[in-house]
Image (tube, rainbow, N blue to C red; front, side, top):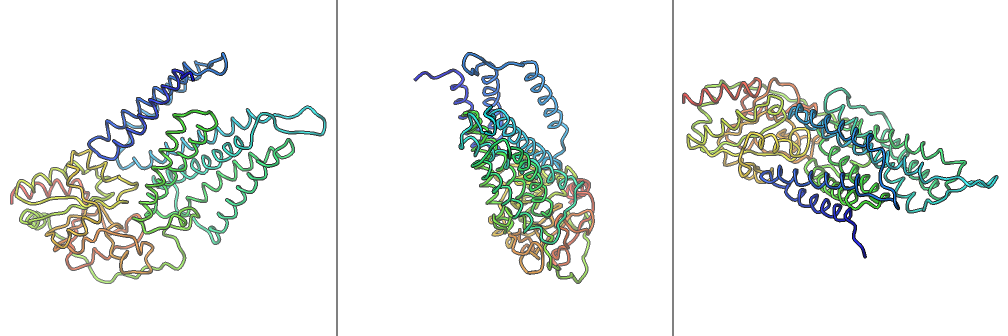
Amino acid sequence: MEISLLSIFYLVGSVTFIIGLKMLSHPETARKGNLIAAVGMALAIFGTIFLYKDGDKGLHNYAWIFAALAIGTLVGTIAAKKVKMTAMPEMVSLFNGMGGACAALISVIEFQHNFRFSDTPGWHTTIGISIGTLLTIFAGLIIGSISFAGSIIAWGKLNGSIKDFSFKGQQITNIILFLGILVVSGYLIAFLNFNNYYLFYVVLVAALVYGVLFVLPIGGADMPVVISLLNSFTGVAAACGGFLYNNQVMLTGGILVGAAGTLLTILMCKAMNRSLLNVLIGSFGGNAAGNTQQSIQGSFKEISLSDAAVCMAYANKVIIVPGYGLAVAQAQHVCHELEKLLEDKGVEVSYAIHPVAGRMPGHMNVLLAEADVNYDKLQEMEQANDQFKNTDVVLVLGANDVVNPAAKNDPASPIYGMPILEVELAKTVIVNKRSMKPGYAGIENALFFQPKTSMLFGDAKAALQKLVAEIKTV
């Protein structure tokens, strides 16, 4: 059997995707893994452009192809260079949505390309389109459309332009709409003809509406779950495109993204104490009726910079808990400076990372890696929770919901049951926040009112800079 040069390009591209994904599992190799996968993608793209043959014909309209590549490369490069670390989750959602839109458009184009009508009067049928092809087209259309619409809503919610919205009976509405999409799709796959082909576009619109309704009610604290889930959707939709075009590298990439996104979704659900079924029917979020959080009684106490400096400088062990406030202030570099300063004074310093801290999975890991924090110093939640009881000082930097004791002791709280970082077990807890406003989940934090907790108000970067200066004088 003859093996074409294009097949070799696709094989190389598929292998680079697998190697790149493996290398992304560790910060020390992640950058190189990303570059390797990008090289593989470039080989696959240019191999397709110059080596693809349909019979004796290759691709044409090179001006359009390269113009699109140039525009996409320019926009992507500028966006990636300008995006702030705090806005990275928004960019991931936006890019993920574009992937879903591309997959859905592939299904639309292939449907139009394959659908043909008979010239026989009174008899209309399809020519050259199999049941398997129709199944793949509809799968790509539905999954890609849901991913696109849901990702755009997620992007809006992350940047604050779209608020949580729900209405009575929304879960039932979502289920009925989704079942309707499946029923109509099944009917068309079995009985597609000239008289009902327009229902294909009804399915397209219904899938877009479902994507919107699916994400709208999701509370902010649950957003990391929906991001990873939509990412898996886009991967599956891309794999459908690979089936349609018999494109091995597209199929491999889609399967890898879909599988990785699904596994990450399961891990996020576990971290948030949510079932995957709840995610699929859109019934989770902080808006459930009847959830009335217990009112918090008591007062909080502030700590001065000098007292905080002395407390940390003379501690044996300090654990830093980074959160979204650290990202907003772009304080990761001065945080690393604080870490090195404390270690010079003989203090053991590490970081406790909650799986869903920030706005997306791995947000804090990426943030600290940018500041060259040693990966070995990053402790996962279970490991950190074992260490808190032997810790002198915990410094919470902008984290809120992931350290809220209500998740353990308030059944009425929207985050009840969510595993948290049990920072209250430490001897002293110092919390840096701009104010006493609730976190992303919109609920108060009982930790701030506990006797062992002291508040250090202010912008994280400014507060840490002043704290570093104070510690140098101790």
